Amino acid sequence: MTEKRSTPKIMHRAGELRRNLTPAEAKLWTRLRAHRLNGIGFRRQHAIGNYITDFCAPSKMLIIELDGSQHLEQKEYDDERTEFLKSKGYRVLRFYNNDVMNNIDKVLEVILENL
Image 1 (cartoon, rainbow, N blue to C red):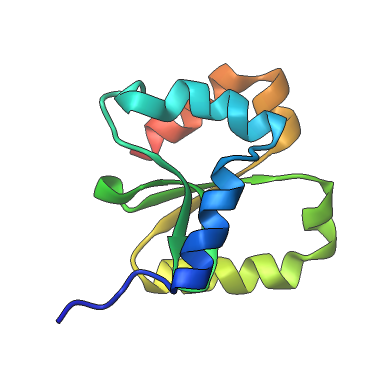
Image 2 (image 1 turned 60 degrees about the horizontal axis):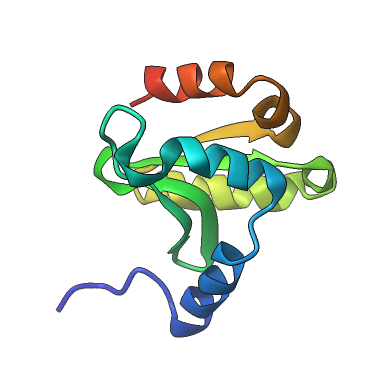
C-alpha cells in the first residue's frame, strides 16, 4: 500500500487556498498553469505531509514558495518546512511577492534554470 501524500484535513485546506490565491500567486499561476513553462506540469497549493506548498512541479521535484512580509516573522517555521520538503526529495525555491509582481520574467528565468 502506498503512503498518502497528506491528510484529508490538509487536502481540504489546500482546496480552499486554491480558490483564494494572493495577487502574486495568481500572477505566477497564469505563467505556470497548463504546462506553459517549458511543458512542465505545476500544481498550485499542493499538499505534502502537513504542509501546503504554493506551487509544485512533481515530475521535477521542485517547489516554489512565494513569501510576503509575514515570512520575516516565521523564519523558524519556514526553515522547518523547507527541511521537511527536502527530506522528501524536493528542491525549494523562494521568491518575494514583490519580485513576482515587479519582475516576473526574472522569477521565471530562475525557475527555468532550476528545472
